[in-house]
Image: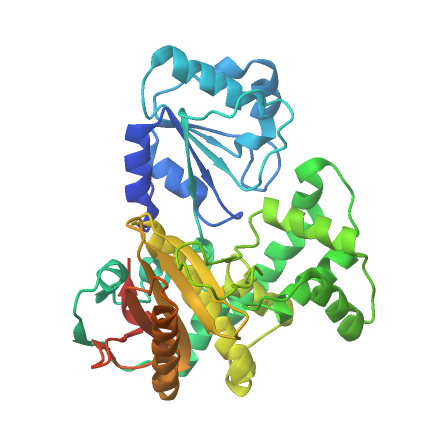
Length: 425
């Protein structure tokens, strides 16, 4: 289907590939990240189970009573927000089995559906694709002079990338990567994302499973997560943070349940710990590194402006890290790599780890300022060397992703240096 002003997404290539491999694909991700637009780009007909205002369309009841009617239309057919009628899953699975054809259906969903009403998992028939908000390369804010894949596979780079304005970086973080907001100013985007959050709390959380939750406590949890963005804080720490800063209390079970809801709505995009391929005797911590789906959500929750970020470089650095890790996930997914973080009991940390499909792993430190590059490179080398001494499998690539640098290159010690505004997949 032709879509005016559609910005090409990196995931488009994966969608094309999966349509050739599976009878149906399911594109999942946070609300308003571009799932419907991406699905339309590859579909020849569509049924929307939600209207543009977010209300259920008339087709929802039709899908529940006469699902076969919903499946009619030129293939591939897009069924948007399919989880509003979960019985469609089994109908599509059956239809795919009968026809034996690939690329018949494109489902999109902004929440993990309740399994009630789904009898079969769909293994072999469905391919799942996770869509994130836009990376800087997709939104046109990265020149794309340097390929992440080239770095991960050890290719040499040496290119001038141009000066970067710190205010521009702050603006990119606040604006975020929601496709509908990429032409907004920082102030406009912050206002839009605040409304986005409120609508999710007021509507989507109830529609997820029909449970009324304490909206005030959910907002407290969201603000605590925002204050602890890009850290490995535990649930207990989040509980204590709410108590100390907001002077409110939330019990552990409620907190865990609310976090589960945020996961199901794809508002969280946490990094799992990496340890599987190192084969070192050093114990690796198993804490998740906490991230929202987009750094703009943090800025909206904490009411951060460009001036506030520039005046608070610690917060600026954590949110810059969040933006970079969002982009690294988008880029790495395009070549089937997996994303993690590393933290061990010797208090050594690596901001981001990418594991390639050949088993090699690549280490990334993320630094806002160019003055921190030497220390970051030194940290990566020390960790690599200590793993080698311990007879473990050392990383194949060491890289510092930075904000305020005007060149991408490979240092004499073998560590790459790359500005995020020059990176692509």
